[in-house]
Length: 198
Image: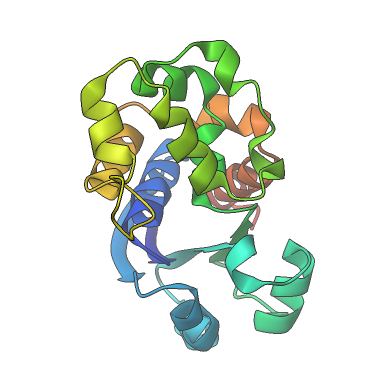
């Protein structure tokens, strides 16, 4: 099945593409990439036009400022089209990326022991990832992901492009789902849709 994508940003788009591919679907057009407020405003309209092609929507829980995924679904889209997979990422997309512990340790060139964390329990998963990158044994990784001192930016100059490269080339969602309940649920729904159990 062709699944279009509705996401907050470019890193989220890469994750969505990888998940769709992993579940045996084909990625279609990627929409959004304008932040969570765009999804909040438009998700109902996208849902109503979800016909021949399916739709995978991902939104970060921490951006919504709501208590739990169920609260987001109830407020934003209580009824979902059969071919629309509307998933809430706990807590944000970096949580799912960090959940592939071995892959991330290799990418950041840090000991695997540093990744023995509950990615979904991190208050700010993106900051957790950047802090882990500070300890990288590879200068290029530190320069790419960690913000330079004295600059009022929250991430390094190549943060998004390097994460996208990691996701597309190395990230293993099947391993990551063992450390992320919300990711496992997303993969399950994608598989069910593939098997005609939507």
